[in-house]
Image (tube, rainbow, N blue to C red; front, top):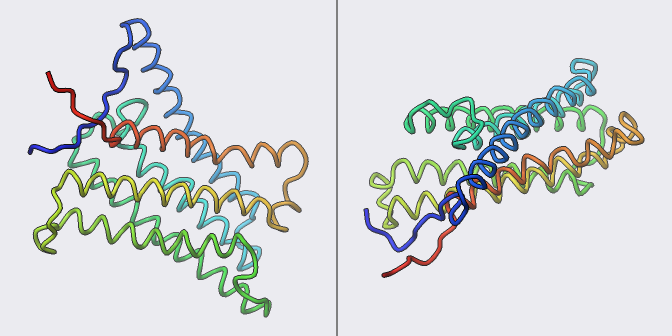
Length: 233
């Protein structure tokens, strides 16, 4: 389908040797992002000691939702370093929707545990930057899921935009949601609970960990959907 938006190719203008180095560096970065997302979820789950309190389930659910499921749901479209690189596009889209459904379920469950914990402890709601960022992230996640539904059923919803533009809008909004989720995760590390659990050099390491997958995701989406002017001969 013709369009005035053209995707920027990866590695354009590089020599063969530089191109392969670029590809392998991207592949290593994507693999590291997979490991970081999984590792961060596991470590936060261990630190929170799930079952010891209602609150203990909140970090578990939120880390699984955003550090693991959302990261995997985006990175599975990467051509380098993704365990699903051999799957068809249709299969990847289904896996993406499955991951995003898990994000909504896990995030809603984590929110429920937080609300229950606050009510039992008779503590006020929405009194920290982390709580406000968390609510904003959840709202943006729901909106993004609605945008995804619009992209799948454009004719049923009678949308006038072309499928190519809908994909670009969906990817751009998804990047905003992921970056907002990253800021929320980072802000959680300034909470009293996390600073009492992790201290010293380890705390600084945790502070930097969520930023790496965010950079990889941002690079992947901008490389795939960044519009540029067509080259006319």
